[in-house]
Length: 359
Image 1 (cartoon, rainbow, N blue to C red):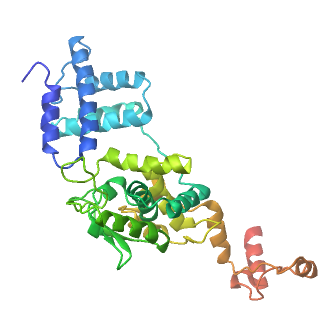
Image 2 (image 1 turned 180 degrees about the horizontal axis):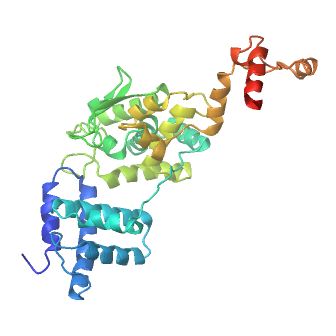
Image 3 (image 1 turned 90 degrees about the vertical axis):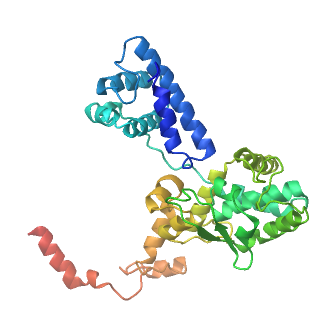
């Protein structure tokens, strides 16, 4: 064992997880472990901890390390990721010190309570659609708007769009097939998402332009700068930037994904492109989530006003046609209600309930 064993175990751990993490996630996690190793080695040199090996570090060593990391004033999200990465490494090494430390010193266990971020506003949503319909018929513009519209109206993740092939866009069934979902090979499932008519025009324009390029790659959104012909994560963002500049506001592709979910739950008031009204289970399935908890917690949830509206529909309430009708019905206890009373409001049952409450 070397003088600085922390990174040796990190390399073993990362090697064991090879093929599970995507390239960008791999880089982020590896950088985090390198930062941990520097701090652990420094603390060992200063005799603040008893060991720098993930196999031998004790509960008190973990307490010292986490106390130091908490004192730096980092965001809760970063501290939470720090703890999670360290726990995974130590569990891999057969050392339960991190788990035991968090139980013994629960205040060190920082929990990042993330809330749902906003989706596109209705005006922003309509602006993108109008710009897409009127964009110049050239490769640069049509490709950018096709990508953004596909993101908004399918809710597919950026990585799922990046890895899509041209055949995954099926105009016969009007569906976009996600062949490379998040969690591919483990928990992710291939899924289909309907393509609404409103974006058929921009997608068809794009496929015609793409076919004229006589490309050698199957990528739906190809790149000439990569070996496999697929766009990089940064390449996806570059295409989005053109739409941002022309529409006059910034947004992320994750915002497009949240907008997709919110549309199908609620719809918009000014347009009838998507009326909303799908249940959360259906929306969650279209978004590729294993449970509705993820959908509601981080992406979309029915708005209160729409929930109230739907709740009123189960009351069998019909609104008065005019103010005169309301005036004529002032003394009627059933203003605006149908003449068929619910059994729960029969006089006999009301009196029975009153006796129960006063007894």
